[in-house]
Image 1 (cartoon, helix red, strand yellow):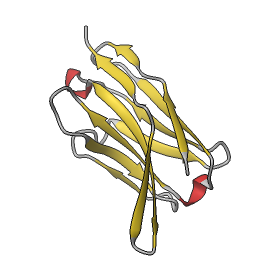
Image 2 (tube, rainbow, N blue to C red; image 1 turned 180 degrees about the vertical axis):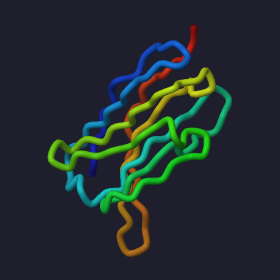
Image 3 (cartoon, rainbow, N blue to C red; image 1 turned 90 degrees about the horizontal axis):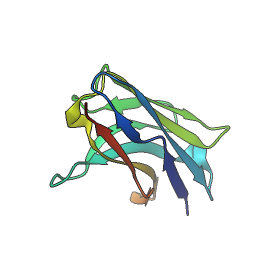
Image 4 (tube, one colour; image 1 turned 120 degrees about the vertical axis):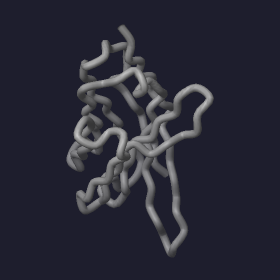
Length: 119
């Protein structure tokens, strides 16, 4: 079991920056692939960025060059640095931890944090 708590969301103007944090507890953080997803009103939840236990990162095309995911295994925390924010980045952002055991994925989710990009 993994408990995830996100923080850092808020209201920001277009072109601004925010850093989201996700603190994990309850299990061995370093073995999990950590991801950020987002869900805008009326839209499906989509993958924004992920980082594996080995540090390999992956980004949605819409955020490449603007967002950076990173993890600090000593602090059991994953971050999402968001720059050059656009109104279309407005969504609830969710932290996800996934571990695959014997080909079965185990997913854990945070409660979400709202990001609003508006002037």
